[in-house]
Image 1: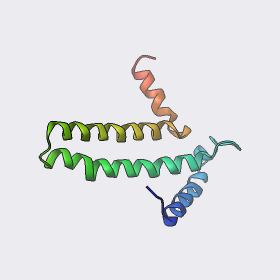
Image 2: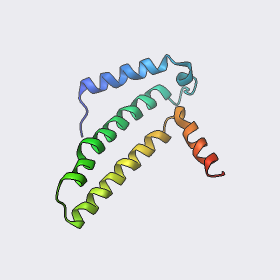
Image 3: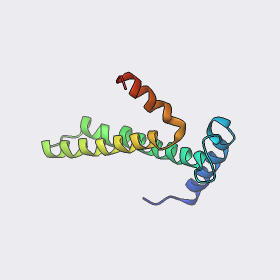
Image 4: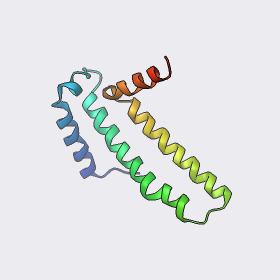
Amino acid sequence: MSVSPDEIHEAERLAERLAQLPEVSGRGDAMHDEAGTLAHALDDLESSCRRLLTELLPKIREEPLSNEELYDVLLEIGEELRHIRYHTRDPEFFAYLEEQTEAAAGG
Protein backbone atom coordinates (compact mmCIF):
# COMPACT_ATOMS: atom_id res chain seq x y z
CA MET A 1 0.00 0.00 0.00
CA SER A 2 1.51 3.30 -1.06
CA VAL A 3 1.30 6.47 0.97
CA SER A 4 0.31 9.71 -0.72
CA PRO A 5 2.30 12.92 -0.23
CA ASP A 6 -0.72 14.41 1.57
CA GLU A 7 -0.71 11.52 4.05
CA ILE A 8 3.01 12.02 4.67
CA HIS A 9 2.49 15.74 5.33
CA GLU A 10 -0.45 14.96 7.61
CA ALA A 11 1.68 12.53 9.63
CA GLU A 12 4.49 15.07 9.80
CA ARG A 13 2.08 17.74 11.04
CA LEU A 14 0.77 15.38 13.69
CA ALA A 15 4.32 14.53 14.77
CA GLU A 16 5.13 18.23 15.06
CA ARG A 17 2.04 18.78 17.18
CA LEU A 18 2.80 15.78 19.41
CA ALA A 19 6.38 16.98 19.84
CA GLN A 20 5.00 20.07 21.58
CA LEU A 21 3.79 17.91 24.47
CA PRO A 22 6.47 17.47 27.12
CA GLU A 23 4.96 14.06 27.94
CA VAL A 24 5.81 12.97 24.40
CA SER A 25 8.98 14.91 23.58
CA GLY A 26 10.53 13.99 26.93
CA ARG A 27 10.55 10.34 25.89
CA GLY A 28 12.62 10.88 22.77
CA ASP A 29 16.30 11.48 22.22
CA ALA A 30 18.75 11.87 19.34
CA MET A 31 18.28 8.21 18.41
CA HIS A 32 14.51 8.00 18.96
CA ASP A 33 11.85 10.39 17.68
CA GLU A 34 8.97 9.57 20.01
CA ALA A 35 6.64 12.11 18.39
CA GLY A 36 7.26 10.58 14.96
CA THR A 37 6.87 7.06 16.31
CA LEU A 38 3.63 7.98 18.05
CA ALA A 39 2.25 9.78 14.95
CA HIS A 40 3.07 6.75 12.80
CA ALA A 41 1.47 4.42 15.36
CA LEU A 42 -1.71 6.49 15.52
CA ASP A 43 -1.93 6.59 11.73
CA ASP A 44 -1.54 2.82 11.47
CA LEU A 45 -3.99 2.26 14.33
CA GLU A 46 -6.56 4.33 12.47
CA SER A 47 -6.04 2.27 9.31
CA SER A 48 -6.31 -1.03 11.15
CA CYS A 49 -9.43 0.01 13.06
CA ARG A 50 -11.02 1.30 9.88
CA ARG A 51 -10.30 -2.00 8.11
CA LEU A 52 -11.74 -3.99 11.00
CA LEU A 53 -14.88 -1.86 11.18
CA THR A 54 -15.60 -1.32 7.50
CA GLU A 55 -14.30 -4.48 5.86
CA LEU A 56 -13.59 -7.48 8.04
CA LEU A 57 -16.31 -7.42 10.70
CA PRO A 58 -19.08 -6.69 8.17
CA LYS A 59 -17.75 -9.52 6.02
CA ILE A 60 -18.24 -12.13 8.75
CA ARG A 61 -21.65 -10.73 9.69
CA GLU A 62 -23.24 -10.16 6.31
CA GLU A 63 -21.68 -12.34 3.67
CA PRO A 64 -22.53 -16.00 3.29
CA LEU A 65 -19.10 -17.53 3.78
CA SER A 66 -17.95 -21.12 3.68
CA ASN A 67 -16.19 -22.39 6.79
CA GLU A 68 -12.85 -22.00 5.00
CA GLU A 69 -13.62 -18.40 4.00
CA LEU A 70 -14.80 -17.58 7.52
CA TYR A 71 -11.60 -19.04 8.93
CA ASP A 72 -9.53 -16.95 6.51
CA VAL A 73 -11.34 -13.76 7.55
CA LEU A 74 -10.76 -14.62 11.22
CA LEU A 75 -7.06 -14.97 10.46
CA GLU A 76 -7.12 -11.55 8.76
CA ILE A 77 -8.80 -10.10 11.85
CA GLY A 78 -6.06 -11.66 13.96
CA GLU A 79 -3.39 -10.03 11.79
CA GLU A 80 -5.02 -6.63 12.20
CA LEU A 81 -5.20 -7.18 15.96
CA ARG A 82 -1.51 -8.14 15.98
CA HIS A 83 -0.75 -4.95 14.05
CA ILE A 84 -2.77 -2.94 16.59
CA ARG A 85 -0.96 -4.62 19.46
CA TYR A 86 2.42 -3.77 17.90
CA HIS A 87 1.46 -0.11 17.55
CA THR A 88 0.34 0.13 21.15
CA ARG A 89 3.69 -1.33 22.26
CA ASP A 90 6.05 0.52 19.91
CA PRO A 91 5.65 4.10 21.20
CA GLU A 92 7.13 4.63 24.64
CA PHE A 93 4.18 6.89 25.41
CA PHE A 94 1.88 3.85 25.68
CA ALA A 95 4.24 1.86 27.95
CA TYR A 96 1.79 2.26 30.83
CA LEU A 97 -0.60 -0.08 28.99
CA GLU A 98 1.87 -2.93 29.34
CA GLU A 99 2.54 -2.06 32.97
CA GLN A 100 -1.19 -2.25 33.71
CA THR A 101 -1.47 -5.57 31.89
CA GLU A 102 1.44 -7.03 33.85
CA ALA A 103 0.03 -5.74 37.15
CA ALA A 104 -3.38 -7.24 36.38
CA ALA A 105 -1.71 -10.56 35.61
CA GLY A 106 0.15 -10.47 38.91
CA GLY A 107 3.53 -9.77 37.31
